[in-house]
Picture 1: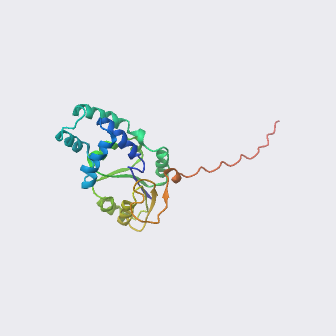
Picture 2: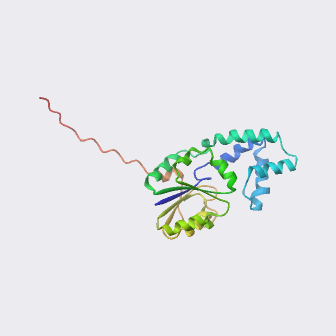
Length: 216
């Protein structure tokens, strides 16, 4: 089996990450989110830190110098492990043990996504990292994997994206949909899991049989 994990909102608390990212820009959360919506989300453009800085410079809205922002962002990214969901690493190890291959797939601006995972320690468990700035359902690498004859398990928070990916991978694929802001972005009847629900419960230890000790 090949297991494919999504990153944002699945393994990474991206909402908290974004909220705290605003501090590096010396912006309020409201102002940063307004920029994100206006210049990126509403235009169908993947977020990129450099593009955002260019916008702030052009509009003369830099609260502190660009060099100071970049220094703060560098320090912020060094601590990105703090935004990995509790027990996410335990879950990754679980599927590492039962999978032929473990893939981390992340969608968005490729440069920004690479910057995000550069300091993530959980990447050590993955056999492959797949970046894409188009929908995962259109990714040619996953189309190639479809012909491998393997079974696939997709663990993702995004319902629409997941179903497109399953279609790409073929009939021998299944989904574990994780609760997140996009787990209901289309109508479906798929069960939605809390991340911890995917962890296998520990089997109770068998009681030790009594041993008769004889002495000479």
